[in-house]
Length: 117
Image (cartoon, rainbow, N blue to C red; front, side):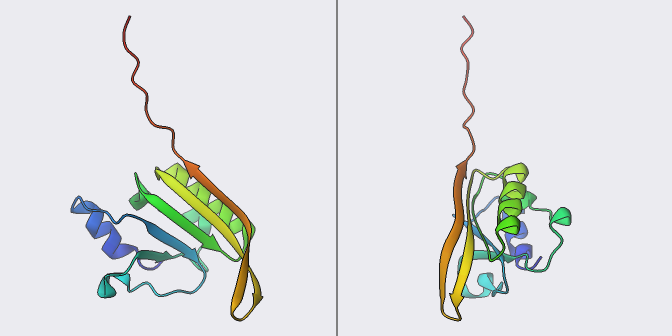
């Protein structure tokens, strides 16, 4: 996993970006140097060992060229406590074009207070 260090430092300081992108393909992860969107790359990582606790309470976008991996990463984000997870499986048409295969948006249920009667 690459790109998470600055994000973890932000979280420890009580800050968080509006969204974090978790990409399962080679991508730039020097987002903090450019004041860009928080981007974490998990390309090539074993999903069973991913520690995504830094997504607690956050909106997360998951993208992969592999449908099964996209679904599994989205599930790991949910289990880690993300507030909203948008996941997509991108299908390559050629070097410059893609289309979307599987896509899903999930939102955690908000806690409901129950009044004592």
